[in-house]
Image 1 (spheres, rainbow, N blue to C red):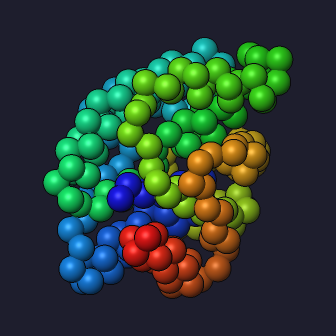
Image 2 (image 1 turned 90 degrees about the horizontal axis):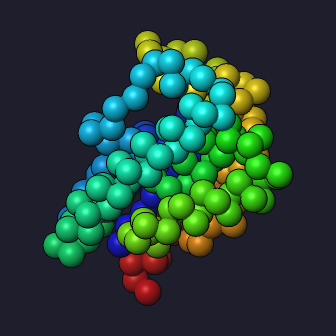
Image 3 (image 1 turned 30 degrees about the vertical axis):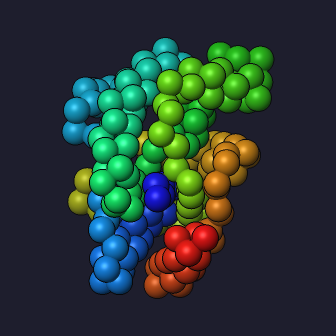
Length: 199
């Protein structure tokens, strides 16, 4: 089974995905935890902070290339019988780069269609995608406690990213209220994964 964890920065997806991985291992499952972007991607600080569509397109292509290579490793892990948990995957690109490049299209619908068409080369898709939904003001408060930030944390921008996350009709997407205590978020997600594993 392939499971992706999605959400704006500060939604808790990294922490929860690790908690889920530990819990599944304790139950005897073989688990492989990964993330995107991988360490193979090359990008600059300027690209992280730019909200210019040209930079958005550049990042989208870089992330798609990175994902194209990454999917082969995910496929190998799945074939070996492991449960794969990924901290971010395709939906992140649709939301984060979509919030930047949509201004280059007639509308959001057209931007999303272009990104989905371009991403048709990504054949390995999650059976379950947990979108951890949280208000950007809550996430910004959480992020303010971090020693280092990624360059994507701005409330106005994160609001657009959140809108895209919520609007994308993505197969297997399950929306989770991430404003709850992380233990409750973790329990809800683990229960859903275990249910899916029994199907």
